[in-house]
Image (cartoon, rainbow, N blue to C red; front, side):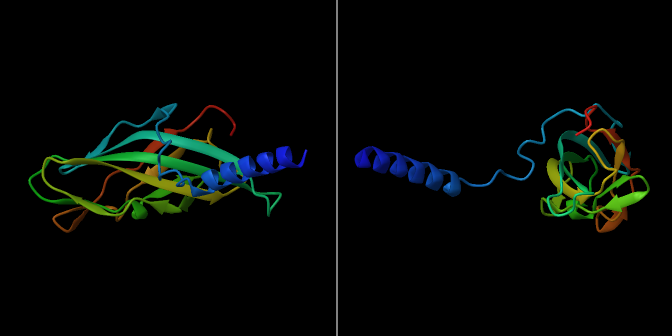
Length: 167
């Protein structure tokens, strides 16, 4: 009986070590679900911005029984069709709903794109808000996030609905 228990304990320890040693999921790894609807790409000057995918979830905050936490990954595609260098800082994007705005909890790092280049970025929002859910219309704004040859570029916000489900 003791040998059987030791074998089970050893297997449990091995599985626990394997789980703990596994790397955490990459930022935006699961942000591949389609939006229920999203505005088409927005463009200003030579920069085009489009939403490519999302992953949305909501759970009750264990520390605050009256507040929910929304977790939203969004994949954003930036295309530079001009002749100048474009820049994008995903940390400067903002999620808006109900007249409130939220900066990303984390995001890919800012980058430059040479003329003719495209790149996909991921932003992750973690928002404690009882009203915000995956089935609420939201918008992403890009104020101070885009630039062309060091000059800020303004594009209109992109509205979207991540899910029809009340998650």
